[in-house]
Each structure stands twice: as structure tokens, then as C-alpha cells.
Length: 320
Image (cartoon, rainbow, N blue to C red; front, top):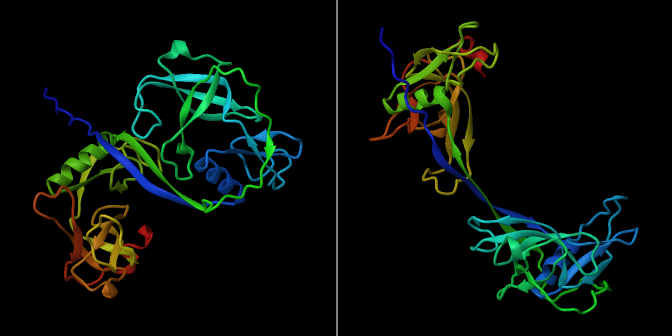
């Protein structure tokens, strides 16, 4: 009796990153402009509570609120958690505490970092103050962090503020980034490994007999495991398509170009790919295409016309 060794399941680090751009209303504009000028603003709600950071609508009544007040740069830690291994982009590059700080004059707490020598130096109820960043631009990072404060001065009371600043901040660009390790699982690992050999392999459902590309390891319709490997293609039929007119960053393809759903011969699910080797305005539903591989490529670079007659609509209408 022989056994077939299963390929090692693939894993790869992936990064999803993009700049998030947003405009600011009068409340957020005043808050960030204030941080740039070493002023912390909150907003007073209809029932008299002072919220820091400020919000634009009363969380109780949903009414718009604009009653800005200045609060203190000192406050009290309400709760905390120690961060022994800071990550990229966090406020400090040495171990620190995440803290919720209720600033003097505020009724809510602000989340930020506390610079402390160790967890034994942090406790709820400790007094802290803002450590301002040397260079400020109108962002929450204008507060570099909090630090322990041993002053015995009386807590600051909220003071009305107009919210007006010279050269006010009206918009921000916040980088969003997610780092994670992705594993496609056993079924897609086999699919990816086959692509590296210039073969397209799907899996057939033992119940409905449909062949899925890429395979998922289970039939999405019947809910049963799919184990029978089926090689499909390499040629296929364009079922639907779109013309791309906006150039993507870091993608060296001239616009306009066509991206299409392609039903490979023998498959019951269309996959997507770029169409080339034909003017973009001549791409059509039913066009017969085949994959084009680049030297050393692990997947088709694009699909081009085979020169065959167009497929009859009845042969691919179920995959549109």
C-alpha cells in the first residue's frame, strides 16, 4: 500500500495598506488644530458632560453639538494595559502602557500611550500629563504620549473656547495598514502549485458534479468536501468584462485595458483575468481566449484570443 505525500500548505506574509483621506467638520477641525497649538479641546453635551475627544453629535440626543471647551493637559489614568512589544507605527518604540486618561475638566477618557519604565510604575488613579511632540501638524500624534506627573495643582476646569485657530486643519490623510499571514488552505495550495506548472486544476463536487476554479475544498452549493482533482482549460470563454480606464498605482499596464470573467473549458465557475492581444474595444462576450505565461511566471500574465469562432451564448450563460 502506498501513500501520496500531501504538499506543504502555503503561507505568505501579506500587507494591505492605503492612505485614508477625510475632510474635517468644524468640531474635529478645531480639535486637531488645537493639538497642533498645544490646546486640548472637548465638546459639551446637552446634559453638561464634556467629551474628549469631541464628537459632532450628542450620543444621548443625537443633536448636533458645537459647544467647545478647553480642558487641561493633565489628567488621571482610569485603566491601562502594558504593551511589552511595540509594533511599527505605534507611539513609542520601547515598551509602554496603553492608558485611558480622563483629562482634567473632561468626563470621558482619551486613549493614548504612557511612557513608563515598566508595568510596576503604572496604576489606575495615577496623575499624568501630555508630552507634546516637537513637531506638530494637526493630528492625534501631536500628543507624543503621556508621562507621569507629580504636581499638586488643582485640576483644570473646562473653559469655553471659540474653536477658531489660524490656518485651521481642514483635512487629514491617515495611513491604514494591516499586516497578516495568509494561508490559502490545502485545496488552493494544490491549485497554486499546479499553476506554477502551467496547469489549471480544480475540484469536482461528488454531489452536483460541478468543477470549481479556484477550488475551495468544499462545494459552496452542496456543502460537501471536494477531493477529486480535475484539470481544466487551458482555453476558455469570456463571459463578462469591464474596461479599466484608471491606472492603478504600482501596476505597469497602460490604460485602457480589459478585465474579464473567463469560463475555462471544463469548469463550472468563471475566474477573472486580463485580456490582451486585441484592441480593448473588440473584446466581447463569447470571445475564446487562452492563457499567456511569462518566463518564470507562477500564473498567467494575461489571456489572448485563440482565433476560434465565438462561443454560443447557451454554452456559458449559466456562468454570467
